[in-house]
Amino acid sequence: MALYVKKFGGSSVADVKKIKNVAERIVETADRGHQVLAVVSALGDTTDELIELADQVSTIQPKREMDLLLSTGEVISSALLAMAVEEAGKRATALTAHQLGIQTDLTHTRARILGIDGERIKAELAAGKIVIAAGFQGVTENLDVTTLGRGGSDTTAVALAAALDADQCEIYTDVDGVFTANPAVVPEAKKIERIGYEEMLELASLGTEVLQVRAVEVAWKFQVEVHVRSSFNKQLGTIITGSDQVMEDVQVRAVTVDEDQTRFTVHAVPDKPGMAGKIFGALAAREINVDMIVQSSPVSSDSLNDISFTVSRTDSAEALETLDELVELGCGTKLTVDDEVAKVSVVGSGMRNHPGVARDLFTALGEAGINIETISTSEIKISVLVRAARADQSVKILHSLFDL
Picture (cartoon, rainbow, N blue to C red):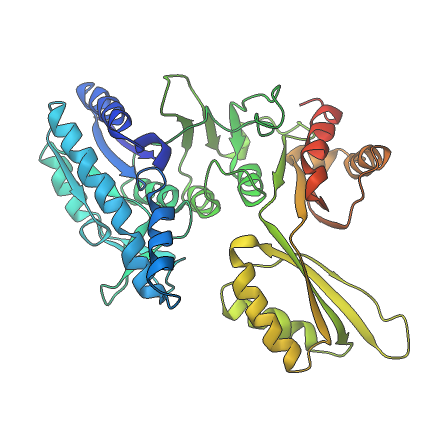
């Protein structure tokens, strides 16, 4: 008897018909003699609808209360799915984060899992029940409800699979797996059958929305093999696994685009020790991740420079508030904001052993008249900031260039 952890996203349980379809898939696995722990996200656009309700009620939205509000979406979907499984002929029980024993830190809206007490889950499974877990949520040591950030149900599923030593961890979504590019932008993009944790971590952080970044981190840390596949067909998807089990000689594995980017520039920052630390320290204190940093060198005796960087658009309002305060305190003379940018990236572990990827990338975009505004690199990826209007064109050029 194997233990299967199966996560179903919001699009997979968006309406009654889809909930029943998910219940049938769960029951099929149970009928083969396996234990099943299903993790669900909120139905369809429920989370966005709850945020809109909060906006209508008040401009004052304490993060603790927002977590309590948003967590109800997963409670609803888990209860409905448990009912559908019962209707399909199997015993089921829906559990919230508190009942699941998922303890997190105190960071509301983007909490991190500290540990999982899986005793209740094990007891329910041993009793022959299918367990339906409310994803996306956790509880603090004081029993306050927290949420794990956008896509947090992915992390719930992988963490539960690790804690329970599950035999399979499957992430069901509305796409067939991980592709060499977004098929909506590049119709000829191919599904990747197997990919290593390192490459998948880069892809997830660079705009591929198939799997949450932290879910990949947990999978890598605890060596949980993850199968990303579609809820709407029985085809095999993409296996995310140890790098020693996948081909390493592929120069570029995939091209991504992230349009959820805002570039901030703090102008005329005094060129002296500690100024950059003050700026980025203030952002870090508010849990704002910063990417693609560029600092200009002083060009005059004024010893002033400009510091530019990007943040996720979801953090832009909070970043703007923080940076305005810093400018008022003399960390710069003014602040400019640019929302018309996109980050285009190529990723591939084979780049370590294949020189010339950067040259070919820059040349191809240059020949198309696409200006590169910022560059960021690691051992296995190259990211460039371009105008948002040229982002899809850039992806198509690079997908063709590297013959993906």
